[in-house]
Amino acid sequence: MGLNLKDLVIREKTTLDAFSNKIIAIDAYNAIYQFLASIRGPDGLQLTDSEGRITSHLSGLLYRNVNFLSLGIKPVYVFDGKPPSLKTAEIERRKQIKKDATVKYEKAISEGNLEDARKFAQQTTSMKDGMVKESKEFLTHFGIPYIEAPSEGEATAAHLTNTGQAYASASQDYDSILCGAKKLVRNFTSSGRRKIPNRNTYIDVVPEIIETQKTLESIQMSREELIDVGILIGTDFNPNGFERIGPKTALKLIKQHKRLEDIPQIQEQLNEIEFEQIRKIFLNPEVAKVEEITFNEVDYEGIVNYLVKERSFSEDRIQSTLNRLKKALEKKSQNLDQWF
DNA sequence: GACAATAG
DNA sequence: CTATTGTCA
Image (cartoon, rainbow, N blue to C red):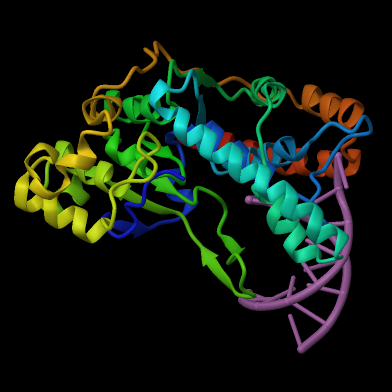
């Protein structure tokens, strides 16, 4: 579930076109997982091709990347490598949630409750290796580069913002802040409405930018201290956090004592986790060394062939979507030519 | 999640 | 023009 820094960070509303001509490092797993979770029918089943293979991730990547490229945004997708061994407990926890959700899904279906069925189906979402491979190949058709991180993708994405190779990192998770990303963008999508789980209400979702430096200044802390705050609240590497400690208490305790080792009342719990290792995952992570990030031409024909001939997408829809992209790119190069 | 069609 | 609904594969 990532970590809950929501109440501690400084968030500023922005728009997608503010990122025109900028390279954005996208947390690939985060984005694709959301496509797989939400692009579903009313009964909760994912979209599939004629062979029964899931296509939700391809649909999501198609429309989102057309929007990015049309606006002149330059996405580079960062894929996860091997998870740190400390993540095992969290991975097991997620597996169990999926198992429970599968049972609840079956029950909702048998009772004819489609709303619940859809909700629980979303919780069963899992990403298969084949989907990762397909997504990489698909991005290549768009001329969009991707990077394979040695470990956590967010760490490499954050790294790219610090070398200046990317303007910001895009993810829904706040881990990027602990990883020291210069800027993190959340809701990096065309603005739209999103349903609040369990309630019949909707909220407008707009992109928001979080600058690590601004956040650290506002709470008067170093990144090292914020990482300790994160560990108190709970990270993927100590999912339960500390008993009776939420964001507010965590902040207060670190303000007062500066570091985990010096907070008297938590020493017993602290002994049970490998906090030095966790600190290292955020402060000094394994990241990919990236030479150069190259964007290529869009292979329109390749996209049509793949989606229509192999994955059962409607030819009309794909053609009109790609025409929209072509038009936008032509307009861009016209605007550029005017300078010469 | 994103779109197009539809209603207001 | 904004808001809602159904559909995509």
